[in-house]
Structure formats: C-alpha cells, structure tokens
Length: 221
Image 1 (cartoon, rainbow, N blue to C red):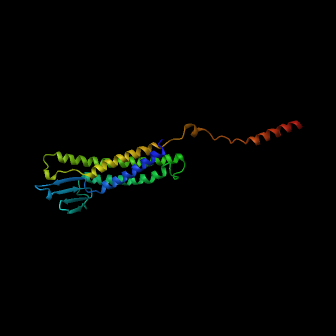
Image 2: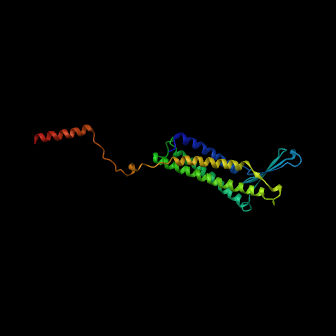
Image 3: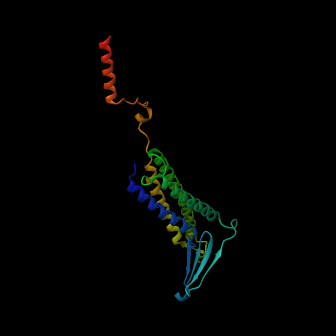
C-alpha cells in the first residue's frame, strides 16, 4: 500500500502530466521542417500541429493557419486529436478524484472508501497515459515513415517536434502516477469480513455486582 508521501509525490507527478498533456495538445510543433537555403538569415521553420500550422521566419515574423476542416485531415491527425483530448479530460478527472482518495485529505470517507477512490483515480491516469501513448506513437510513426520514403521530396519531409516528446513524457508520468494510486487500493482482511459482530462485554463492576446479588439470593433460600 502506498504511503502518504508517495501519494503526494504521485499527485504532483500527475499535475505535471496534466500540464504536459494540455501543452502537447495545443502546441503547433508536432512536426518541424527547416529550410535554410543558401543563407541562415533567410531560414524558414515550418511547424505542423494538431490544430494549426505555423511558419516562423528568421526575420522575426510568425504566422499560423488554423485547421478548420476535420474531414480533410489525415486519419492519424484526427485520431491524435481525439485521443489527446480524451487524455486531457481523463487526466483532469483523475486529479479531482485523487484528491478525495489521498490519505492526507479528510474527503472520501473511511479507509476502505479512500482506497477504492484512489484506485479509480489511478485507473483514470493509466487510461490517460494509454491515450497519449497512442497519439504520439502513431504520429511519430507517420513522421518516420514519411522521412524514410524516397518517393517523397525533401521539401515535404519533417522531423518530430517538441510537442511529440512532451506527449511521450506526459504519458510516462501518467503511468507512474496511475501505478502508485492503484497500489493504494487495499482489501479488508478475510477474518474481518466474515467474523460476526461480537457481543458487547459488560463492565467488570456490573458483572461482579450481578454475581454478588446471585450469591446473596442463594443464602436466603
């Protein structure tokens, strides 16, 4: 069973994982292509994300184009959008649930209820990590396949951007936090569940008084 300090550490890791998942979802640099030409002063960096495509010029100009049409996007981008949004939702929900399941809080009821709530929070974190892993893995596969394909011109080839690595990192932190919270779930001992409630013992003074009264009664018979 996870200790209080371990749960607090896992909660902080989960918070960083949530921030990482949200940042990776919104950042435009899932894949990057740099065109330097003959002079580095005229370098152009093209970035593509899940929601927008951006171009950065070495002169300081920066422009972005939002991807409004969903059906016109490739399947892996549509899947990455959906799974990353689900990852963010599950992660935020897991944060709210884990607050009630932590031992250092007064929410959630008794010890057994808290362990069940902590297990539910851990399950949310594990699912969030799984969705994030699917997104970044498939996206990374498409980038590598396109980069190694000789039929694709060099101007259309991209490399993984920082958002992909942030997604991988947040997925790992989700798995770590989820494992700790799932380990917090404990079951009641078998004897405690099966043993019938014992009769409440009478106070010793009352027992002695009853026994004394019975003895005196016998003397008068």
